Length: 110
Picture 1 (cartoon, helix red, strand yellow):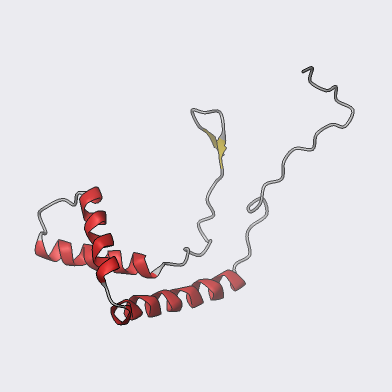
Picture 2 (cartoon, one colour):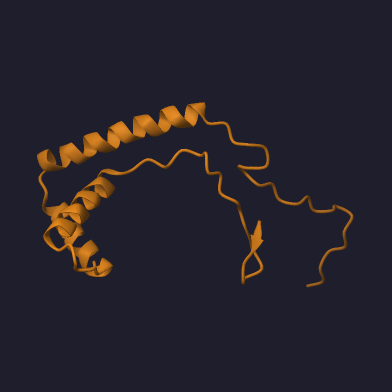
């Protein structure tokens, strides 16, 4: 664990933990990004502009067009659930418990 500027400690990340499930919109954005790179390979992506355009395109898609991305998301959800069943977190990872408060400790004055 390393300390941060705010005094809080960051949790170490378990590298063996399965990657999270990807949503249909995330798959759509990935394909948009690939299209953009093919059209403009030398141009860097302005994230704010790019995400606005992607969201507008996503809203304009018909349900039949979205079906392809939703199927990809369902397949990824199945993969994630399968991997999580097999995953066993190492000791010390997972939910952190809070320190037990001493019941005999004096109360703070108001």
